[in-house]
Length: 450
Image 1 (tube, rainbow, N blue to C red):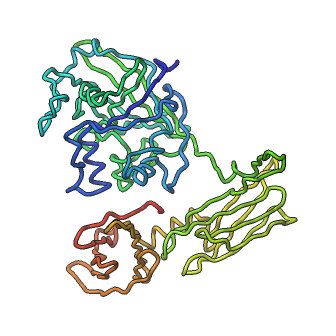
Image 2 (cartoon, helix red, strand yellow):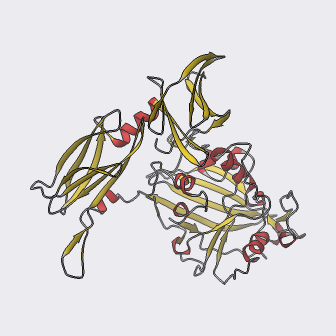
Image 3 (tube, rainbow, N blue to C red):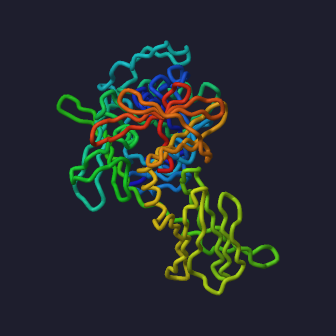
């Protein structure tokens, strides 16, 4: 099957009020769930027509400034203040089938109630909402058994397609045949009708159990997602076909970037030797490690937080390890260069004797981290559960401890901000819950690096 049209421009809207509210609660707070403009205009963004693919085409997991496993985390980091960018351009899967609005006439339903009343250019009295059943299934790699994780409906959209088109063109934007417009994620009010894994797992805190017993917070490599849509008539159905995509593993740029070279105009060789980059979360902050490696000369340059700490312009031995310490806690690091077939190399970083992924996992169990944005600055607050030490942007801060009902409270200050970490007992499964309050406001825990 092929794409149903040659896609010209692609626009993705954000028209489900339940989805927007859920995401707002997770990324901001319940009190500030919807942005002030959301009920006044159909929010949208320009996507990438070049990465629209037909159903059945696999999607490659993205690389980006993230350590988690789904592009929503890239979106959270990059979408302020201009909107999503690389989180939304890796791929868009569509069905090869086209269903006309004429075929959907019998399935028109009332438009979603809108308050406040839309501006005149967005108002229309006729019904242009549709009762279309939507279903999402996940099939783990190597299995023939699918698990239905969501059942939603097109009728939950707050903004109609007419309103989306009117807003898109009100400033003079021309629309051409083949342009693709998407409604955005469609969520219902009930939890089993949420339209994204971000909501279904509530940001990874409530894993979904598949029929094979495995669990999903977000998609895993090899998972196949199937989206289905249909309208149920009196004795007949109108189907939208299936929209299927399989998630492939991300490319490992640590291996792919190994020994590319360029020739300058004079014919001499210039190397692109930066082959590996890691972010290491420690108590005193997140440190960056960069490694340059000459695939033939053996040249090695090691930088920590942008500062060069090692340089060897020539080495007879191309593989091996380099040892160094990192941060105020002097974490012991080992950078390994191992051989691969076809004159290639693999690069790995061990911290305190563990692969970086395992070290980061351990850090997530022994520390808590919060990102605070205040007074135009960004602060990272880290709490070490074993020592009860608190760090703000890499600096240790003094705390005062008092007992409160059901737990303890550690108060401290930074940059004229009053902060407190409250530790309260929960059930046996959750253990002790740590919450950060800054100037009396609860701050959401930041799991970006864990």
